[in-house]
Length: 160
Length: 199
Image (cartoon, rainbow over the protein chains, first blue to last red):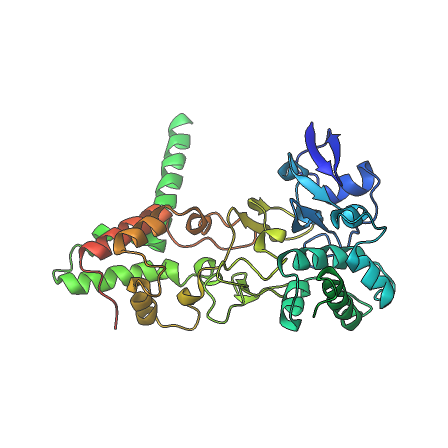
């Protein structure tokens, strides 16, 4: 039995330890916000947080997260700690209408949250480097960058 | 029958041992060189077979971009060194994808390499594009080698786990030549003979 937290809820799964975390989230826990893209850590669609750090869940054996805290896009808003429905990034995503087809967006949001967690006021280079491994086939990159900057501004109390 | 099996096993064992020797000569094979400096230079030349191998060089970029594979292509997906910690930019650390051990991926001919920690060498130790002479000089320079003494360098090359990964790179990658033990012996002998650098 492998025990860990998912979005602050204790879970225990009786699965082979090498099962990708992605499949545990989607098929066992019905948290389908996290997407399967490439399966080989090349696209970022499956990004979640493990103990606050971005992790590609498609190449993360579930045994490796035993005792850890996993956050998925479903739990992102709660991490802001302000009781609002949306995380500042999600609010900014809506405001600038960042998604097109939307498939990669949960991974984009989780990666952006990891970026802002370390660099609250990111430069264009910070955003380019930190988001470079999250692919968007709709080419929404300009809007994504705009939304990250907007969210950073909101998180920093409107200062810029 | 039993004799035949034992003979075959002995032959296999000899073949493996010879392959290791052929890949990377042991330090004693340089004992015949009478001149101490000449021997030291030759020892570093042998060490350089490991140091310049893709398993080592891929994580010693001079341009802050890691390389991948035996062909040393640019890292895919795009990745940069990040800050001084050298484990990726803000929010995207090496261990976002690289776990604590090599990971087999169904349908793919290469494992995703893994070790804890997984990170680049410091920026001051960028080797790609340098000559063996330049690498040697850099390796000995405390200002550029992380303030390491020669004894520290020996310990690092002989025992560090991430260096050791070079001989256990998983499916789809060539292992570094020889063994980490032989590299350690060569390094010790190189230091004992004056740690001379090739010209």
